[in-house]
Image: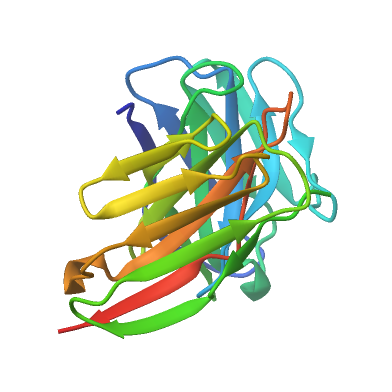
Length: 116
Length: 111
């Protein structure tokens, strides 16, 4: 299947700092990528849909100024957690589709963020 | 808001037993996917079902999509310790592009 690479896999940062997470589609172009958040022993919650060349679409309850998403190219989307706090500690996962509606979504390996 | 209800949420069984995981919704989905996730990793796609009534088999795993495309099931025959993991169903909204996930079923197979 297609490969989606996420970096870093783990990051520890201090409260108040910002952290950037990258999501790359390695062998295909992705006009749309998705960002999820997963708490321990829970399922994936969709945070936002990242669209290449336009603004991201955020799910209800997700602060767009807190979680900045940039999709500057067809192979790269970034999620920046701004002014991080301990409650932002979580597992963040991105996914990308190989095509339009009905095509499969492939997931990155996830990023474990710990804010101390 | 479409919801995918997944059951059971936790299952602990002995090696060799069979099990079924269910994924239900009151809404129609254009397709449903089943994923397996290991701790600290992203979900890995197992199968996608698209046609109502469709049945797909992957070795000891059998996936079924309901006739009305509102529900799906995953049946594992003769479970093995290597099947231990979090199983997630996910669905695409009709005409949409977003994938939403069920709560997940955490399976533990004891040797």
